[in-house]
Image (cartoon, protein in one colour):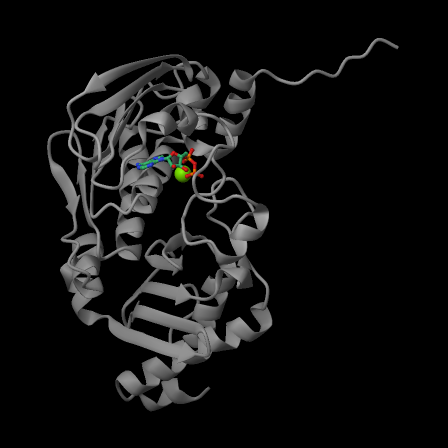
Length: 340
Ligand code: ADP
Ligand code: MG
């Protein structure tokens, strides 16, 4: 039989990876902002045009990319963040897969300008569909700016699947809001098209950040929570039982600064509210969970939004009890509500 197996060229491999990492404009924004956070940025400015397809720009004042590193940054599985898989057990960064930049580059016109603090000028790399890389020297402040234009220009099926501008921009703004809630010590701004639509101060005050993201009316009413047990800590804000929503949209969970989707955390939270709120209504929460990285696996999906906990059985009661006790202590509950 004639051999038929061959290794895919890097362009095709990157486009396949992009199918998982870059689902829509909001996924590009998430990856670029996470890179800025990993670079130690204090200010992160995001500019969007339309639904994100014409333009996404993320500019940070982080450490920048060394000149010799810039060509590597857009190579798949090239990362400065881990050396081996065991490093995930004490991972301090949001990224580790070395996939985002090459994936995004393969489905867009990308421009990265970056300047580390020890260089007098910056270096710019321009790519079209991840190829024909062109380098040029540019004047720029210390930090990195990544511009993504014409997203999905070479993957028409992806482009067709995108929703209306309000929906796609809504998802972008939701993503940035969640990341800002995870990092109240970083100043974020989101501009669309020439208007600042979201801005946080970066002063490190979580309630103030919640005000900027979810509205000051909500922020004022939330109850602080901070419970520690061994090396687990649950902190943030939770809504009183009479401040509820019909959707779970305003439930924000972060684990060690990473925004996550976790049905498990959602169930544990709602268990804490059990009998205090009617079924089908949901509390508003901004909950930061700090646990050693070795206690969960974030390498479940390329988007790194899903996590698998090693000890769900012990974590579930820690969360539900912490929430319940905080609610009980915050103010006396009407007697029918305390029947539990
Ligand atoms: P990962 O974040 O998983 O390492 P990426 O493809 O997102 O993979 O980025 C590749 C590398 O490029 C990163 O490991 C980092 O060294 C560098 N990099 C990307 N974005 C930035 C940035 N905004 N500032 C500094 N370095 C960056
Ligand atoms: Mg990354």
